[in-house]
Image (cartoon, rainbow, N blue to C red; front, side, top):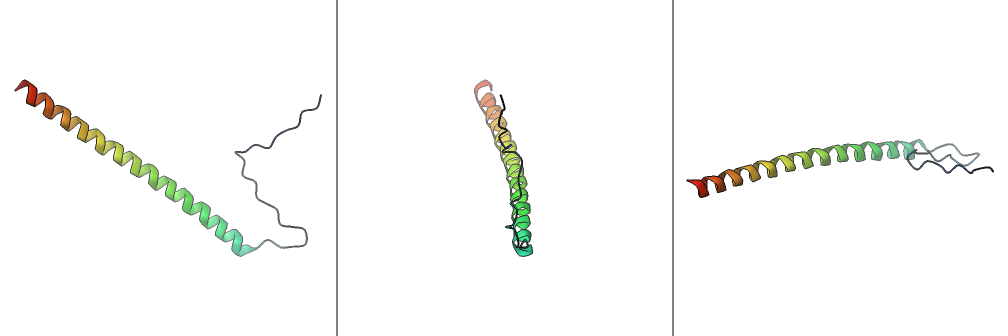
Length: 73
């Protein structure tokens, strides 16, 4: 009745260096830089999506007001 625990995919695990080798500081710095750049790119993409939604929302309201004015005046 023992259950095997599956690793949580949400938890990021840092790969351990092989025994007898020191971790490469350059590779570690590059990995951290890539993670930071990916995080910043996601934030920028989210901001652009919000701006685009707002723009299309304003255009839709303008078109609806124009159509109401066209039909009822």
